[in-house]
Length: 279
Image (cartoon, rainbow, N blue to C red; front, side, top):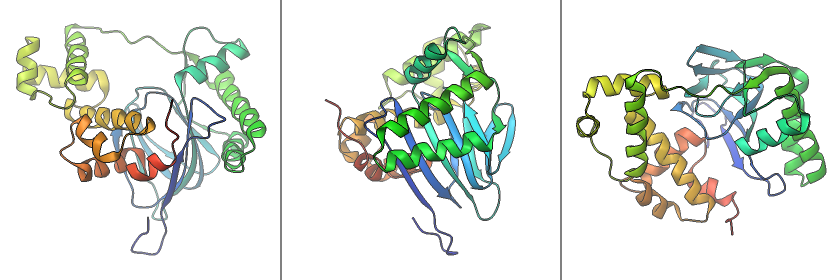
């Protein structure tokens, strides 16, 4: 994608079949902004140019070259350029299963691991993350897998502990979890906030507050993110974007295109071309 001022934006979001349980994104963004969203798995991102500004529950980070951003599953965050020239980065999206597997191999963590910091200055790890991408792009499976496991192990050994189990806390937390379950079940035809509150025996304002506290975003934002995540799974399986749009509750493919591109960083058609249907 191009920009009016001549600074080119580009992105590739893909899977390398020899590295199961991993998504790869390498990109340069200038005007693109990621709305509040979360991931099923982990984020390990090496900023290679410019500055990325990441909005996290604890505050806003500014990540420049040589830094590595670490985000745990289901942590709501935003991202945008922190300088006029934008930012470039190489990102690894390892699944929970892959992280757990590496953690078991190094034997220093019990349970499901979680990162204990959001960003670290680590030029060496940043270079290795970029090398994982280059090796995968060159079709060098041995190098890509070796480098991947090495840098994931480095991050886990230095910056991880047991991922804390989510506690429901007060009654509102239970309502938020029940609301999420309803929205997941009726993703294509969700109830209004008032209807949802009535079903759960609470008030709209109380439910909104509890949901935002529990998931880091209001229900309508969470629903858009959940629809995009489900659309990704459908595209992974070979579903056409137009069919995926209807299946997850978007009114048409242009609506899917807009939200998908904002959250994933590439349009659904480009995303699907980089996948292999799963048998």
